[in-house]
Image (cartoon, rainbow, N blue to C red; front, top):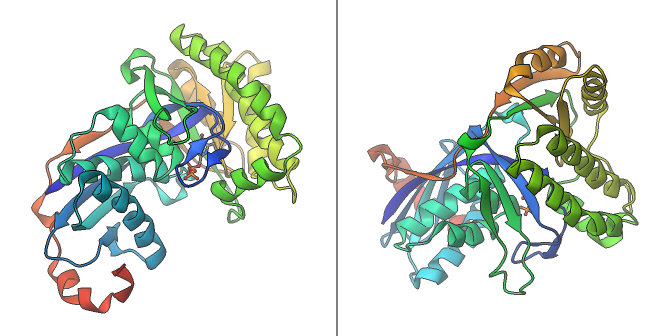
Amino acid sequence: MQATARANTNIALIKYWGKRDEDLFLPMNSSISITLDQFYTTTTVQFCESISADLFVFNQQLANEAETLKVTRFLDIVRKMAGKEWFALVHSTNKVPTAAGLASSASGFAALAAASAKAIGLDLEEKELSKLARQGSGSASRSIFGGFVEWQKGTRTDGDDSYAKPILREQDWKLSILSVIVASREKKVSSREGMRRTVETSAFYSGWLETVERDMEIARAAINERDFERLGEVVEANALKMHATTLGAKPPFTYWQKGTMEVMTLIQSLRAQGMAAYFTIDAGPNVKVLCLPKDEQRVREKLLMLSTVQHVYTCHPGSGISFLPTSKNKKIPYDLESDRKDICYLSR
Ligand code: 2P0
């Protein structure tokens, strides 16, 4: 009744931007990502007949009500699939530096999906795990697999054909992904709110939808042919197009800050000097730079010369989910057991 799983984060090369169903996390468009090798979540799920509510311990701290509710809602799906009503202790650790600016919801829900399904006795294939993880956070559907991954949007209203599948394994193309952390103020518009506002109000959203399928085709072909320049060009253009939709929203918004612009300008000027490097940006100010391993050190040095750049984390394609032995210290800690009665918000 317990299992431990690990999942890596991923970054989108062709972006998931907009939902057609918010409850089932069904996207408006398909997307492509690289699973990274450096940042991951490890989650242990232990179902217990003796506890009367879910307990969620995140990075060694009892999680607050809102975080626990997200886990409980997700476990409700797993419980329904298994026909069981057991509550669970969920113990999750993020190896994503706080400053990394990488969404931890992708690795978080992928690890939770894998660990909870196994712990409750469901024997799910990766495709089914991807559909399950998607219902916690869209990008989590892609973190089930390693390397280069495509999440096909699907067309069904029940989401049964909306899942990720691998394009190329992590060992088959070793690219470098530099995760560039820039000095920034706190993010004002979450990715969830940003997507919703853009779909509902942006004058440019139709242009996004009209062209993203072609971007998918180009990126898929470039990955299969290991054509780095072709991939980099479409990745950078797709990111710029996604961010353009936010400027056409009502009210308009942007995730870019001063450091974001400086990194974009630097990468474009490095390219003008003959260096193959391309950027992409997600729902925040930080930038991810793609380059070939032979250029990784030089690009990194140039990035670190910018005053707005605080850190550069060097990543490569990483693996999909893995299951680990559950260590004894992941069992319900005594102090949580004795405190449990006082934690009223954990009851449903
Ligand atoms: C992506 N992003 O493809 C896009 C690009 C941000 C920009 O997926 O609402 O945390 O939980 O499904 O997956 C971030 O959004 O959103 C994201 P939900 P998620 O990676």
